Length: 225
Image 1 (cartoon, rainbow, N blue to C red):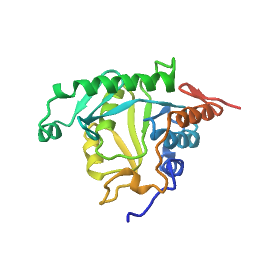
Image 2 (image 1 turned 135 degrees about the horizontal axis):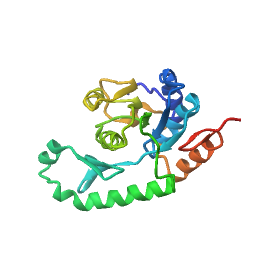
Image 3 (image 1 turned 180 degrees about the vertical axis):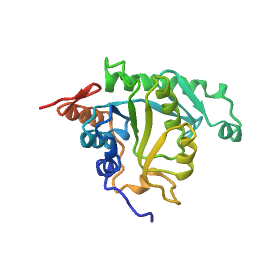
Image 4 (image 1 turned 90 degrees about the vertical axis):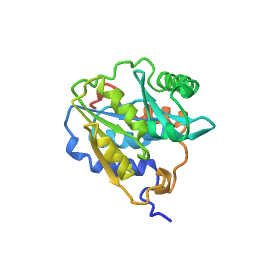
């Protein structure tokens, strides 16, 4: 059995935050990939005393096998495909159109639910810390990164508690920095490295954002007491 690194996502966030302490004081934003990235990200935002918000990207699963990712979408209409995987499955991008439509609808639902009327994330010329609970294939993170680049941030840092090393290496080719606490050679799946990796629900995300807003103004700045 793999060694468990984290009790849960909150514990992972607290550990990850320590490795990002050098970012304290920068003009930064923490952006969480929901749903699993949210309980990780809030611990980083609290530790660094910087505002957080959510940023939505969605995996595109193969027809008849939704858990097998062959691409991803992100805010701003960004779509990326793993073309080699598509070819190996005998699929074309046209074959994915129904799934793309469904996932864009789900993405818009999540944006409306989690962020409401906060349309402008105000990340231009800022350091963006993009957070998830782990990095497996990296296709969803790739879509998010390419979408974030459209807003011209000063820097993008992908922060994850655990990652597949080859996926991290591939994403570095996008010109970003990656902070990953553990890159086990037998990675297999993100959830193996957590004692508790129960699915994060919509309500849990909303509860976390509500609690975070008591200490910081979500999406804008830290509330000084």
